[in-house]
Amino acid sequence: MEIMLEAKDAGDWAYRGEGAANLVLAYTGSFPPFVGKVLRVRKITRNGAEYDNGFSGLSKHECLLWDELASAPSREMAEHLYVKNVMSPLLGSNNVDAGVRVLVGKEFLESVESNVLSERPSWRVNDAKTNTECVSALLLSDLSLFPGSVFNKEFCITVEIKPKCGFLPVSDLIADENSVKKSISRFQMHQALKFHQGKISELSKYDPLDLFSKSIERVNKALTDLYLTPQNNFRVFLNGSLVYGGLGGVPSSNNHLTGETFEELLKCVIQSDDGSRTTKFLELIAETVFRSRLLDRLLKAQMLDTLDIEGAIHAYYNAVSQSCKVCSKFRQVEEKLAERYAGIHSDPFSKSLKVVKDYLIAATAKDLSMMISLRPTDKGDLESLDDTVILKSTRQSFKYKASFLDLDRKPLKKMEYYYELDQKIVRSYSQISKTTHHPVVLGA
Image (tube, rainbow, N blue to C red):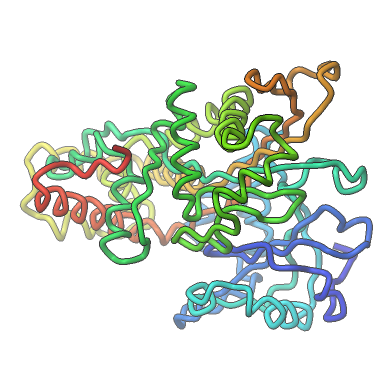
C-alpha cells in the first residue's frame, strides 16, 4: 500500500481481459515489484445503480452473514479478506493468491479507462466502466506465466478453464416441474437459454459433468469440447499473451488463432507430427487436471449448496427478516413442498444464515476460473514429482502450476436474482424440449 499508482504509470498496464466486476491489467513495465503481476481494478455499472466508492462497509445483514469480514474498514478490504479467509482455506492456500492491495489515484484510473477503451468488448463497455472512486486495486501474480518465468526467460504455456457447476442437485425442495435439473447440467440448460436469446452463436458441447467425472476419457472429452467451442470458458496463453479463446468474457467464439495456426504454434510445446499436436496438448491438460486434484477441492466447495436455490431462497428471506416472496407468489404449491418450505421458515435464524452463506460460497466456486501453467523440463529433472506431469504419448515431462482465480464474494442481495435466473433457465429449457419433443442434449 506504500506505492501510489498515478497517471504517469497508466501506460505500463495493458488490457488483459475482464469479468462482470473487474478489469484485469497486465504489467508491461520494468519496475521489479510489478513484473509478472496483474492488477484487478473494480468496475461500476452504468445502469444507475448506487455508486460504490469502495469505502462503504458491509450491510447489517452481510455483517451477520460474514462475521469474519465484519471488521473490514471498507468493502474493498472485505473482498480481500473473503479470498484470504474463506476461499483460500477451502481451495488450498497453495492454489490461491489472495494478492495485495496497492493505492491508485483517480487520475491513474481515468487514464486506464481511456487507454483500454478500444480493446474492451462493446457490450462490456455499455454495461460498466472503471470505478474511478476506488482508492486501491488488487495486485496479483500473473497466473498466465509460470512462477519465475519472466525473470528466467523460460517458456510457458497456460490454459484458463471456467469449470462451472460440476454436480447435479438432489434437493427434495426442487419442484416436480423443475426435475430436469436433476438430470441435465446447469451449464447445458443455460446454453440453451443463451442460444435462444441470441447471446451465443452456437451451443457448446461442453458438459461440466465430464470434467468432474474422474474418468480420464470424459475429462479428455470435456477439454476437446471446450477447445472446439471456447466461448469465455477456455483460453490459452503463450508466455503471457492470449493466443486462443475470447477476450473480456466474450460469449461467442472469438479465437485469436485458427485450429491450423494453433496446431503450428504447438510445435514449441508438443514433440509430435503435424495434425496430432492439438490432440496431444489436450491430453496433457487432461493429465494435469487429473494429477493436480484441483477439481476434488473445487467440487467439495460447490457442493456446499445442499438445498439448491429453490430451497436456499427461503432461508434468504429468513436471514434478511422479510416475508418470503416465493411463498407469497406461489400459494398453490405442491403440498409436500409447502410443508418443506414451512420447515425452512421455522428453522433457527443461525441455521438460515449458514444455508445462505454456504450457498454464496458455492456460487463463487461455480463461477471461478482455473489456471494451469506448464513449462517443459528435462526427463531427468523429476526430483519434485508432485508438480510434474508426463505426456506418455510423446515421452515429454512438464512442470506445472495450478491455481484458482476470480474468487469474488457474491452479494447477499443477488439471491433473488439467482432464483429468478434459475427459474428462467429451467422454463426455457423445458419449453425448448417440448418444442423439439425430446431433451436438448448439447454434448451429443
